[in-house]
Amino acid sequence: MSDGIVIGAKAKDGLENLLLVDRDDPQRVLKDLGLLVRNKGYSFGTYTNILCYGKYVYALGIDDPANPLTLLRISLTDDSVFIYNDEAAGKDLLPYISFAESVEFPTTDKDMNAYGFLYRPKNPDYTPGEQEKPPLLLRVHGGPTGMASRSLNMKTQYFTSRGFAVFDVDYRGSSGYGRAFRQALYGKWGVYDIEDAISAAQHLVSQGIVDGNRLTIDGGSAGGYTTMAMMVFKKFFHAGVSYYGVSDLLGLAKHTHKFESQYLTKMIGKLPEEEAIYKERSPLCHASQLRCPIGFFQGSEDFVCPPPQSQELYNAALENGVATFYVEYEGEGHGFRQAKNIQRCVSNEIYFYSKIFGFKLFDETENPPPIKNLSDKI
Image (cartoon, rainbow, N blue to C red):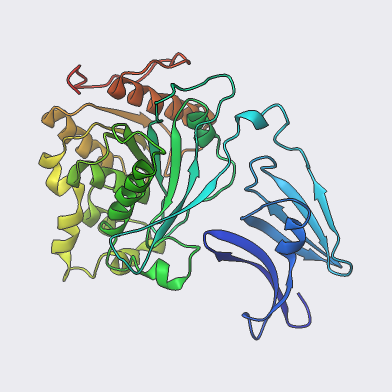
């Protein structure tokens, strides 16, 4: 903008706010545009496609589940807010939408808590047993210094509408909670993400929110690494699914794309001096310890986390007698794009959990992947 004014989204406690700030002193807030939006009854915590044109600021608010994609027009002269797509989600879907609850929980560091968003099971057509607590799907974001989002996620709603509680964890090192919180992961990737995923699940169990005997975890890319590492190094979660994850950190360091070629130096350590740490935290280097059921989704054209990163740990699961499956989608890269494959992943993942925990699915899974080493003793 002109006159030394900058408009942007500032994150705090995992949520973004839309602000006008002084270009020369960014801490000086000239106008809280997010407050104007909240006064209209909206609770966006993520803004994107921000544009200033004439007397107006335009932005997309993308994380109110009742209005998942809303175009905002905010007047800089009279503070009026005009909303487009006011009922984008459709009133008929609202009874089935599980809204995010912000959760703060203790970590192994008494001076730093971690955070996340809880989605409770919700389906007005079904009622759980009086004493029954839901299974948990704990989701780990990528990055590894990314962050969970409250934006409407249909995978989350798929699981909550079928009786799962879902928790998107923001472990120490996630963005959105200040620089010190994000930089806490420096040198600690493969430590804090694992510790905080466990702490989050323990917190939910202790609060009586989820069933401590039915704990699952999944994640993609860096989140896939955390899932693999959890299944190898810990015996806490009962099943997990990795999406295009990392099993060999040295391999990632050698073959990742140029943009992130030095990323691991901060997250783990400098090579070759710290090679021992890379091996210590690589699930593949300790594959003989894998004893927890785990599934793998992989893209054939993934050049960030190539297929061998998943294939080799899958082979180890087969050798160890661990319940497992492997699905590779032709033509997919790092992050799936084809709708049919995304849908298959969701239905195949819950199918895997149904076989591990022995519950019946309402939906029939079309052409599910064969689960190897599945037995009644799991």
